[in-house]
Image (cartoon, rainbow, N blue to C red):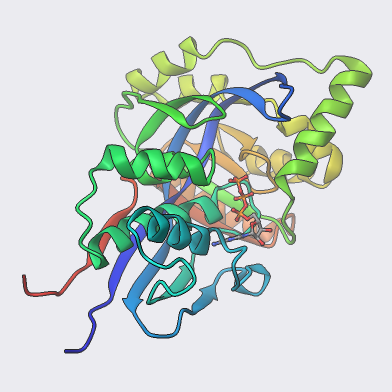
Length: 309
Ligand code: ATP
């Protein structure tokens, strides 16, 4: 019998609110964040195979590891261990098609790990529920549970403790991709440095933003977007200031650095405005490329499963 591949589609995330607490003794920072899943996606295909391999195609594929340090492969090993399989010989091959910018602050690696958990659950017929997969996801990384869940959610702890948030209507975004990625630990390091130096200002309480999401009014939401990592991302990559300014000049309601950056996300009034802003921004020469996206969208989900049960 020819083994049937399972393909899972998984969204990028943007943080609408990212409040970073002080560094804990374990080096992590306590977060209060609001994630929204966007229609910028990766696809991960898992197929039973004698030879364990990993192939990466698409957006930024050259800078993604194809060995054991790939987060998707860590997901294979973890699920193999927990289901009494040999993590060295898991008997699967992975193909990742990237649409999420690599090292862009949009949780691309986490997305692939979440997609892999869901795909393997089907390939190995483990029948784990979302809660069980969510617990494994949290072991793999702070953003992995949200990649599985999608929608809009409030995250606390390291971002892995999630509560769904009501978001009325669809929000329209323009995403500006930078030429090179930024490493997340470097951006947190810069935040600690800036705070030590000058006591950086911090984003406010999250409640007003939750109300704006519930109202569905993008103008109200635009006033409340906030990211404590923005100043450190801009400090490491000063050109981002120009990108943020150009998006607003092109007609966006507001612009924000996504997570640890360097990707910038611009909130627009509606879909037509987003297309106009994207066109103008791509002509401004401030970023590598521009995409239009919507949110919220669902989390990781199987998009092909042709097996006859
Ligand atoms: P986050 O927003 O979760 O902090 P990010 O979106 O900034 O992460 P990723 O795209 O997840 O960044 O990549 C971060 C690093 O992880 C990259 O330098 C890349 O080499 C490595 N990496 C490992 N596995 C993957 C993967 N499956 N896809 C992308 N990058 C990966």
